[in-house]
Amino acid sequence: MRARRLSIVVAVLALLLVPTAWAAGKKSEKSSPEPFGRFTVDQVERRLGQSDVHVFDGNPPEIYARNHVPGAMHLNTEDIKEGVLPADKNAVLIFYCMSEL
Image (cartoon, rainbow, N blue to C red; front, side):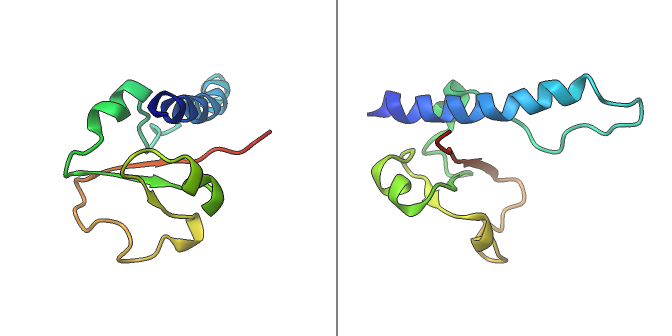
């Protein structure tokens, strides 16, 4: 079960990296660095359970209920409001989701 969850995260990360790689070839000299970091599945797994790491699952409720990363909180983009995210500005926030193609 854990391997399946992690494979979902890998798939999501792969989908996120393709547009980034394409855009890298299109960047101008004045482009700024990407504001968000990316983690590998192993990096996410090592961080799970740490007090300063918060994992958020943006999948529909039925997918979250069936298959989410241990400790992940269900949160859709429209639910992100003041007070929902941790107050600690140094906390690590990990967001993921998947969509069936």
